[in-house]
Length: 198
Image (cartoon, rainbow, N blue to C red; front, side, top):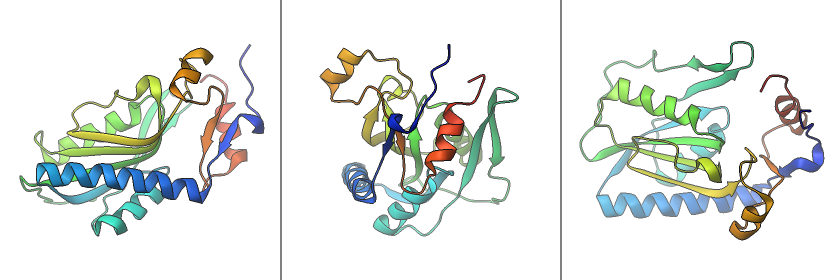
C-alpha cells in the first residue's frame, strides 16, 4: 500500500532558514570562484523551484543575466518534459574564465539537474564550466549530477526514503520530512506527493 503524506510529513521552511541556506551557498560558491579565478556569466534557474533562490543569488553575485529553463515530471508519460528550453537564445558565448551557475530548489534524485546540465552543454559547448547548487538535496543522490565543476547545497534530506532511520540519526537528517519552501503551497505539495503511479 502506498504511503499517504499528510501535513505532519512537511518541513515548512521559514524565510529565516532560506536566508541561512542562501548565505551558505553564496559563501561556498564565492570561495570556489576565488580559488579558480572564475566569474559567473549567466545564472540558470530551473523553474519553478530554482526561481527564488536564483534571484537572491543574482543580487548577491551582482549577475544580471538570467537564462531560465523549466523542466517538469509528467505523470502521464512517466518522464521529465522540457517546458522552457534555450530556444529563445541566439549566439551567446561564454569565455574561458566564465561559468554558469545552475540553481535548483529541491534536489531529490538529480534527474532534472542532469537534463539541465546537458541542455547547457548543448547550447554553450562541452567545455562550459557549470556550478550546480540546490537549497536542499536528498543525501542518497547528493553526488548524482555529472559534468559540473563544483556543487554545493545547504541541507540534506531523506525524501527518497532510501536511508534507514538509524542512518539519518547518525547523519543529522530528519528521516520523515519533505521540504516545503515559503513560496510553495502545502496543499499543492501534498497533492503532488500523493499522485498515483509515482
